[in-house]
Length: 221
Image 1 (cartoon, helix red, strand yellow):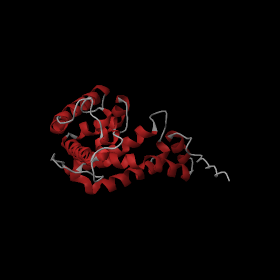
Image 2: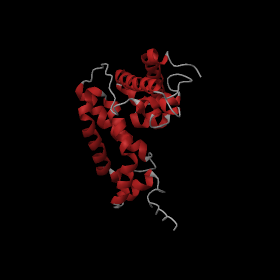
Image 3: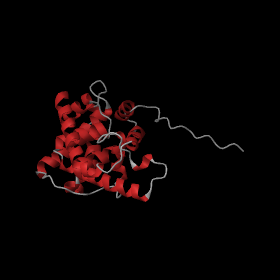
Image 4: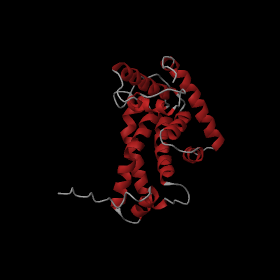
């Protein structure tokens, strides 16, 4: 007996912009699809931008971001920006307001929201901090020693991110984790393209220095 064929979700074929326009037009299910598609990315961005010192406010910023997306749905226009740039601009402003009000002080925290550091360690697999570095999940059967190393490296990277100035951390996260172009980053952060490139370059330089002790023991490919 043949297995039943899965019925495709009609929203899967729609872009983010199309979903938002459909939601603005009254289709609440389009918003549900959009939320499910981007929930984890928005939450991760808010969490890493706020850092450990403001960890208790992450959930509130996350909720405020989606609430603002809902209330501003009629103002969204794909002619002005893509939905992702529009939504992450809202998330950035919500988080940045908390950072500004709190007078956030830089401090070192070896924290990891996921509990094991492997999620953050995936950044290494993209060659961000050192050529030839490979994340633990690149190996088919990583040893316990390799897992332990990348767990520690992932936690260290998150702590290093906490040490960056807010604007540099935002630029790094938008580009390296969300794949934003310099133009999209500039629109999200409301600064010039050359300025955002400068933030990104300085962030990478500082992160390389911060991670030097861990990366020095990674063998070259």
